[in-house]
Image (tube, rainbow, N blue to C red; front, side):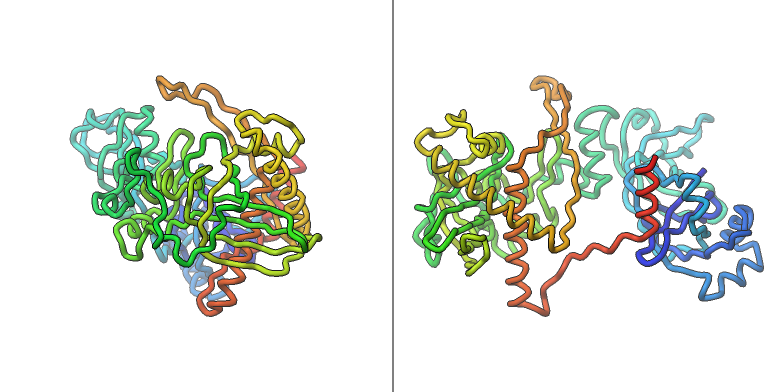
Length: 471
């Protein structure tokens, strides 16, 4: 049976049961809901939804009976409430849709068995209803994913009416599956659309084997020179886009901690074609076997990648700390750095564990790196403890790592990613830097600073979690 859940931040969620009670509302829509009394049945819900019950209409006119809410936009199948939850849940019926949140949907074909031209598109998102559409050449899309758009949903129709937009590819092929992910997650219309324009590529600095990029005297003007400071990066094995690095050294009064981020803004001018492309993407998208860059590869993987032994432009936050890791002074600014080493997490963890002669590291540099990693870890343990005491919440999740067949690109193996302490060390350093930058922004631009604030979980959700744990 069709079912929907309407989330509320300050009250229990509302459960809407039955196709009639949903009243043609789709996942993500903003709707007007009439809350049902304990004695009202699903039949009453259906009448109220269709406007056939005079008493229901009168109740709907009451301000206390109506609520404007948004149907939960789930990524999986429609929410199914368990029996315990249904017994205590607040039930409702949709009496109107305030705002539609329709988008392009990826679907497969359920052809008209009678041979007509009115078919059903079956969205890959199970939370979306089937969509009626006209299409003549069904043989061309019978085994393919395609994109369909919704045009309307009449009150007397079981399904919304839509139209065919374009085909994506054969079901089960890798490229078609990737395009499906991109469209469904509203990342792009296809992989091809994520290429960069000629105008953007013309804005890029020259970097080739014959002419490798190096900072000019103009690039270095006004920057703090940190090329003699021991700076190193720690990333997943094989990373090409090394966008952050760290440093940790003892001083006469304590420690100096540094977080250094690649200065991409040096190469992307406001209003440029590259700026427009980056704004449209918002972030680099990582899939199991590929990535779609926010900025052109010449920047993300070469000129702005903080590679070991190469001079690179960075934006840095540097803290002077006492021996108890209390911050005495914070410096923000543009720098030029030369990373001494680009390590993978496994190498850094081996140094932290006291292992000597770590494979892949320069033996002459290894003692300094080991000291830096250990002192950084000690500091981050203290900072993490303080953050937790301040009420920080950490949500644990398991990342799956895939291995692929180089010939077929099929998945050869999958296993949970090994959790290492060094992962948390680097994470804590980045959190510390983000917090420092956020405070600086708020101090300098109090009327323009934005805080991303997550709403508090409702008691109803804690109850659901408790039931799940007990089960």
